[in-house]
Image (cartoon, rainbow, N blue to C red; front, side):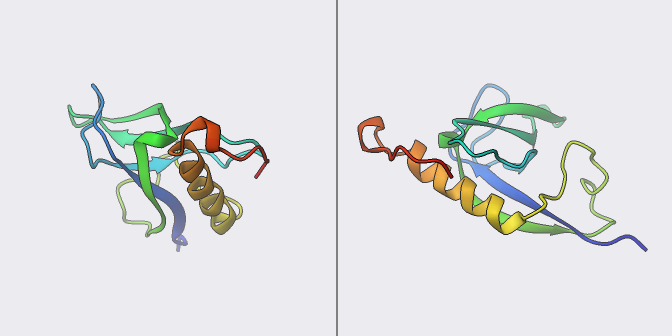
Length: 112
């Protein structure tokens, strides 16, 4: 019996040529130590295909953990994986988002 997977999901706050506003995206990678301006996500395109793309953190919001049971359609998608420390990865994403949506002159100069 397979175990549930815990992944990070978010939503688009603005649309792009490929993705509609409000689309749910799955975060692909754990973050390193520096503030990411772009992160890779897996998202359903306007045409209905699941695509992997790099996206600006400022275009994403509502970062949260989601449990995928084995029967979930995205469970076996190798592009999406469970972060080693999901709570820490989620904390870093939320901090990165808050920094990237602030004016550049107000951003802190620290590592995560």
